[in-house]
Image 1: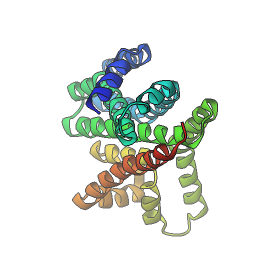
Image 2 (image 1 turned 180 degrees about the vertical axis):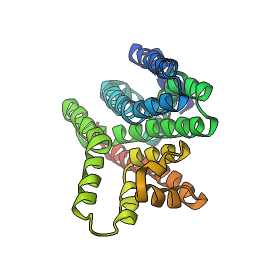
Image 3 (image 1 turned 45 degrees about the vertical axis):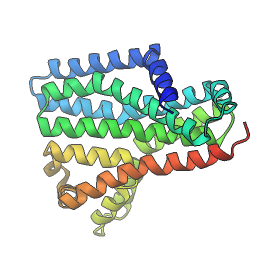
Image 4 (image 1 turned 30 degrees about the horizontal axis):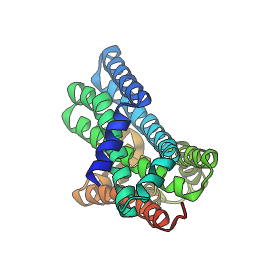
Length: 255
C-alpha cells in the first residue's frame, strides 16, 4: 500500500495542473492580503476561495484522475494486492497531494497574515473540504463507467453544495418567515459540509452578530465545545461515508 501511495502522491505532485493550482492559490492569497488594508477583509476574500474553488478543484481533478487511472488500477489488480489496499492507497495519495497543494498555496499565507484562531480554522476547514470532495469524487467514479457522466455528476454535486443548497435554505427561511425556524436551519446547515465550514470560520471571525438572531443561534450551538465537536464529527462522516460506499462498490466492480 505504501508503494502505491508514494507513486500516486509523487505522480500528482508533478502534475502541471496541481502545480498551477498551487501557484494560483499563492497569487490570489497574496493579492487578497496585500490589496486590503484590513487583514479581516483579506480573510473574507480567502473564505470565498476556500468555499468555492477548493471543493471544485478537488472533486473535478480527483474524478478525472480516477477515470484516467483505469488501466493502472487494472494492472495493480492483476497482482496479488487486495482491492481495498489499492483503493485506500489511491484515496490517501490523492488527498495528501491536494491538501499539500492547498496548504502551500493558501494555508501558509493565511497563517502569516490573518488572526491565528481564524487562520487555523480556515486551514483545517480547507483541508477537510479537500478530503471530503476527494471522497465524493471516488463515490462518483463508482456510480458510472462513463467518464463524461462521472464528471457531470461531480460538477452537479459541487453546484448543489456550493450554490443551490444556500438558495434552498433561503427559500425555506422566506416561506416560513412567520415561524421560529432558526433551529431547523441550524439542523439543515449540518447536511452540507461547505455550510458547516462557512459557519465555523465566520464564528471565528466574530461576524455572527451581523447575521441577526440566526447568527446568535449558530453561535449558541456551533460556538460551544459540544457544537464544535459535533461539527468536526459531521465533517469526518462526510469523508468516511462516501469513501466507504465507493470502497464496497470497488470491491464488487467487474473490471
